[in-house]
Amino acid sequence: MKIRPAQSFFIRSSFLLFTLATVAVAQSGWIASKVGTGGQDLNTVYFVDTKRGWVGGDNGFLSRTEDGGRTWVRQSVATDAAINDIYFRDKEAGFLLAGNRIFVTHDEGTRWNQARAFLPEEFDGADVELYSVRFSSKKKGWVVGSISKRDRVIDSILVYTDDGGETWRRQRAPSRLELIHIDFVNDRRGWIVGNGGTILATVDAGQTWSKQTSGTTNTLYHIDFRDEKKGWAVGERGTLLRTIDGGQTWMPAITNAQATLLSVQFLNDDDGWVIGRTGTILWTEDAGRSWIAQESSTKQNLYSLHFTKNVGWAVGGDGTILRYEK
Image (cartoon, rainbow, N blue to C red):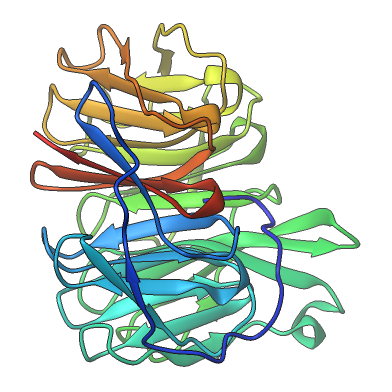
């Protein structure tokens, strides 16, 4: 995910075939490739299984693979805004965020249709940017983002659906700072992170949200919980936070990373990954007690990370795609 990515022309061409050319094999097992984005960045990656996945980026760029990333097919979405997030509730129903719009698919990602647009006239002329979407059940889902005027954030935005994404309504969050990522572990427990070290939590299925003390003012870009107790958050200047009590207390993890960290995911209680700017990749196999820097074979910023079983993907600047298989 990339804050306020560039926007450009409307994408008219669809279903153009792109074949990835392997560039290098990193020592850690990460294989670097590129997809043809015309020099634009990739901001998000999501796989529903080890074969079928999507990458989304600047200027409404969307591409799909059915063969585990060996080939990619360009898809058309009615937007020229940057695609910030892709998320599938199940194998058929998926959601895509681009600028101020939510798109939905009900046919396994074959077609994407606009479900909701948050227009400036609804917000006194201010612009809405949507960053992250997650569902806690088949019907209930949330989207977070920011509201800005003249490139200055003036409020957060938190919207929810309780009918599977047919309608979306705004809910007031206890923070006016930019909200960047949301995660749920079950139908009642969820967390949001954002600017200024913001962490919000719910224990009642999103009816109410309360602030947690992160211990930092650095922007937090991503949060990942294994269960109701164990979670991780990453952010600016190498910030890596850990909780083992559901966020009642957050503790900094010690790493040598100086770069901003942008995404974190744990595969199990012990095995976890973090990515960030300038090609940063960190790995732990001891529940985060120690973190080892990995060779990524790129200096491009890495914005989004996604693992399905033992296959991992990271995407970033200039169409960069990294693949990892244990």
